[in-house]
Length: 200
Length: 197
Image (cartoon, each protein chain N blue to C red):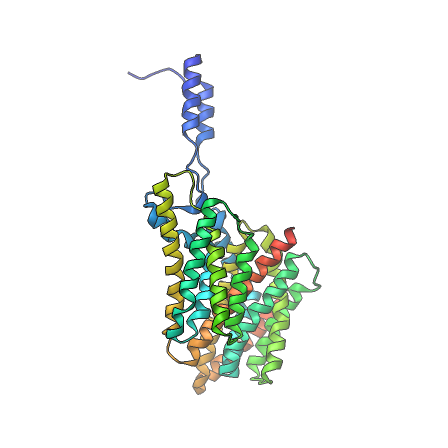
């Protein structure tokens, strides 16, 4: 085979590698929408959002307002740190520990003061934001859109479980269902935490 | 006109190397981890029988037990799972799992109503064996977190199946159905205990 054809084959080979799939983005979607969906692609993020959402949703609707702005501020701070590469990446067991602590509070039906929920909301938001770095290979506009989408996405996916839990009827079965779901989150987090410590 | 020229070997090699991995039915990544975790409790009849029995007994014992037992079980199961992950040996895991189906099935079949804490301790003790069996599989999975999520959801859904069946106790004919189900579960447990199944 001639030199020219060898070069052609090698060039084709270099063009064939698959698209890098870091951040599990969906091909064809806008960066903003990808950012919105970003929290759903990480099981650890989903666990934290569900567990903390259950926790704040189990308090009356008026109090629902208090931890959410702090969560949003924490998420914004975390995203900015991730973008700048400060404190990033997050030590993975931290997210699972956050999910587990929130789920323990729900499953055991602890009535903790509002200040504790606010502080935990800030920490959860910060960790989730910090663990959602944008794809730095894109343009500055794409990075901005991803960051904005992720920030709003984190908020939406927290508000959803919180809202639905807060509007559940005042029936025993409803409270029991939430506590059972929280116990599932405890079990998942505990086993994976055990695995991550066993690997060390 | 038909070409008689052959492809050069390097071109064939490049084409072969460039092909993507066939991923149909593969158990890789998050989805694969979830599927293997979800199917893990469903692939063992002894596991399934015991899980259904937990929900069945909880519903049979009343409203507090109905939610308390399905909360205790996964939490204690996770502790057993941690032992499995850490490769801490636990003797008689398979026997413990089979015996859990026997014991819980007999409780339902004979309509035993112990104090709630006794039921909780009993269910928790059995959960250790189930958790250990699941935990030993966890390090082998392609995605441990997704595996754990699938496994816990499947376990919880089996409890809910048991609870749904157990709610039939509201009716007199339902009590017979529930107690008969307990007897069937106990029978299955005996079969596993003595190696018949």
